[in-house]
Amino acid sequence: TFLPSLEFVTADLAKFDIPTNDDTNIGLLDPYDIADIARFSRLKRDQNFNHQLSYVTLDTPVRHTIFKDYYLGVGMTKDVILHADDAYPLENGLTYRTEIGKSGPGVNFSVNNIYNESGKRISEHIKFMVPLRKVKLEGQYLKRDEDQVFYTSDQVEKWSLGLSADMFNRVKLRANTSFDMVNDGKSISAASFEYNDGKMWRASFDATYNRDYEQLESRNISLGRKFGWGGELFYTKEERIETSDRSTFGLSFDNECMKFQADYSRYQDITADAENVDEFTIMIRLGNFGASNARRCG
Image 1 (spheres, rainbow, N blue to C red):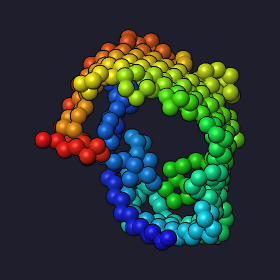
Image 2: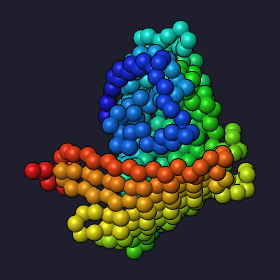
Image 3: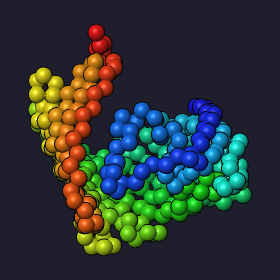
Image 4: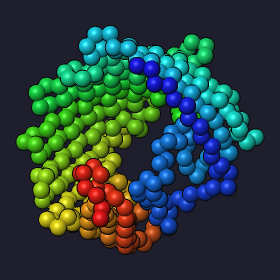
C-alpha cells in the first residue's frame, strides 16, 4: 500500500495566551475538541509557544505484506518551513523510517526506526502483544532523540510491561509498569479496575505509584447510574497526592438531537494556602448525534 499525504499548518500565536490553572481554575478549554487540536501534533500547543509559524509536511509511507499478517514498510517525511518569526529560527527537516511487524489475530509485534538525513537513527520503537486466553501481555520500548526540527520533544528512553484481563464481559483489570531511563521521576506503576453491566451501573478505580518517590501519585474514582430515559447520574473523584483534589457530581443526558450535562464540583489546591473552589457547569450541545446508531434527529 502507498498512502502519501500532504499537510499544511499555519499558526499565529505571537499574541495568544492561555490562562494557567491558578485562581481561574480553567480545566477544560475545549471539552468536545471542536478545534481538533490533534491535527497540530507537531506543535507545542500551550501558552509558552507564542510564535508565528507556517510549514508543509509531505509523508510518503509504503507498506508491503510479505506473508499473511506480516509486513515490511519504508517511508520519508519532509518538513518545509514556509515562514517562522525571527525569535523561533527553524530549518527544513527530512527523516526516513523503516518498519517490520505483524498485525491481526494472535501475537502482534512491530519494530519502527526513524533516521535523519545523515543516516543516524533518532528513534527506535518496539511493541508486542501476546494473547493468553482472556489475558493479554503487552510491552514496548521507546528510544527517541530530541526533535531536531521543531524542538518540541525531549530525549526519551523508556520501556513498559502490562497485563490486562476481561472477565464476564463486565469487568476489566489492568496493571502495568514503566521504567524511564532519562527521568526516574516518570517511572511509575499503575493499576485499574472497571465494571460496566451495559445497562444501569458502571464503576471504575485507578491508581498510579511513583517508584522513584516511593509514594502514590494519583487516585481516581468514577461511578455512574443510567436510567431508561437516557440520563445518567455520575460522581467522580480525582486525587493528585499532595497536589490537588477534585470531586464532581452531576447529571448527563444525550439522544440523537442533544447532549446535556450539568455538574457541581469542588476543587482543592493542596499545595497552596487557598480556599476551595466551587464550580457549577451547564453544557448544552445541539446537533445530529445519531449517525452511529442509524438514527436521525427530527
